[in-house]
Image (cartoon, rainbow, N blue to C red; front, side):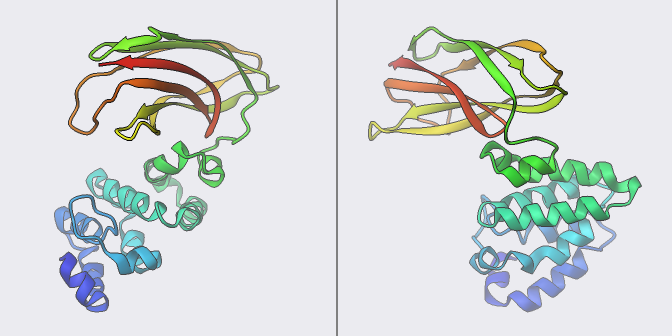
Length: 247
């Protein structure tokens, strides 16, 4: 399908638009999945990366689909687009939130959360606002601890901290942690991990603990040296500690 989309996008998109209303759930999902601009295992659709509105009619047909299997593809499709056109995706989802009938609101809420997951990790203010999160969290971080500070490969890095609200009303918080891994060049590169999403009341305190395993995985090579663990709340780094990996 993807070679056809690159060779004759107009004709192929018309075919996929019809497929998006097919009775068969697999065909409906295929209409979205097959036209994702950055499908990880498929040929890249450069024309659709340039023109994100090209596949929007397909997604419009599928956004209220009864099958989560289909709606998940819609969310992933939007996540693909957001890598190149974040504001475009936020605008589309904002309109969907405004237009959605009550009976379909849970579906659009789910699509919104999953489609914006990378933008939320990156602290995009519009994406955060769409899920009810302020980019300026009123909080204090106390006693961030990392243990051990020198880690042997195969062990787990443990960290803990206390968070206190300084707001006068409850606020929704999205907490991620970022590990700046040493690369082969000796430089570091950040990787964001989800930690916790919750509501914190006025002046409320909460202690959070987490363990992160540093062991062999197929998607990452580890190198010795000074690493950094940072806490990111509502898209902003608020505290960090260094630790050393020995191999």
